[in-house]
Image (tube, rainbow over all chains, first blue to last red; front, side, top):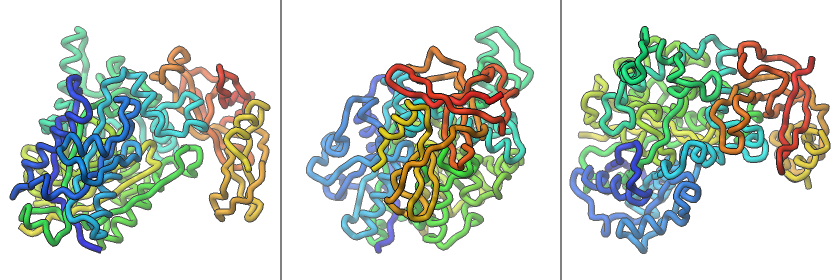
Length: 411
Length: 126
């Protein structure tokens, strides 16, 4: 098996792009990824295959056959190209496919991408489109929603361990702080700033951030989760280039080595799981990735962890082995996952604040690891010269999980 | 062979159907066509009594289009007496007072026909 390097990543701003289609967003992200190749890339000559993660273009854009369409729009018509789908982990599925393709020796350079154009639909429409990642027969008929599925996990977590909704707000506050330092984020604002703006607009006052978070301006979505526990509806795209290690130096002297890949699944129905406070898919993926990389969770300097809802960052941070079961919430409250903590998580603001165009999220996570390990993350750069980073991207209610571990190459 | 249609028909008859593995005896609720423990395809229908306890619950305030007029409503995961668990809507509780809904409370299944669909509903068993 060949060793695989990441030679560039690019992404669009995440947010509402009312005037752009999915394919327009892909081109924008590709343009940036191309400019990020230190020594340049000739797309026509170098790209041997293309893999695009897009959860549901069928419902969002009435468009299928994304592989061929994307190749055509990138001027690459003729090369192998297809779409991967694993709900919110669709672009991690593209990354995994690209990895397999390069590692096998089949292709020496593969372009992988993620896209989601969500704002064509209104909120009930988006809720409905995303819901197909849950079990149509055994779950959706009850009227459950994605916030509802994660609320069920939160309730069981609070029941089994200690903790409350108030404690979870640590994650909201942290990720909004990090997002305020990210020019690509959908919400570039601290919760305090959002509270202040709301107070002025509505002619009310809030004692502090928690007073705002408990107010009607942060309404319940699925008890106990409120609006600011949820990632937003977003448009966006992300792109990365993978090569065999043999040829990566043609493109950059600062690649990231992909040293660990782990994938896993769990029952789609929450009712099929013996314990809602843990993700078997993530545990399986993490164990495989650490084993392949020959490292332990202690060796991870920085991580991107799928915080589609606040509770999930806590649960997954335990499943990844960063903290003991039931101690993830406490660790977040102690500041261990903040920018200056010993295990910084979601330094780009996470899905919560950066935005979550679902199919684009996996490779957008890689974008942050790319910046941080290369020392290019600007105002949110973590100190200590991080060398090893991890991404953990899950699909639906964590019924699929994909973990990648990256190591900075020699400078 | 047991299919999804068997399950849905079961609901219409007020039954929650599971399967029992003929090879290892594993019980799966709701029904699964292949044993999750030993991998055998040789499974048979297993009927539950539809009784259990609340394991976890939430109150939905933002619903998909077709449930919009029902908010707020409670959805729970119920641990069934025979083993296994199933998701259902919860009635006999006040969705505006979630603090009064307790994990471990006994509930009983009743089928609710909503348009073309049969909804799994559990009523708090007083």
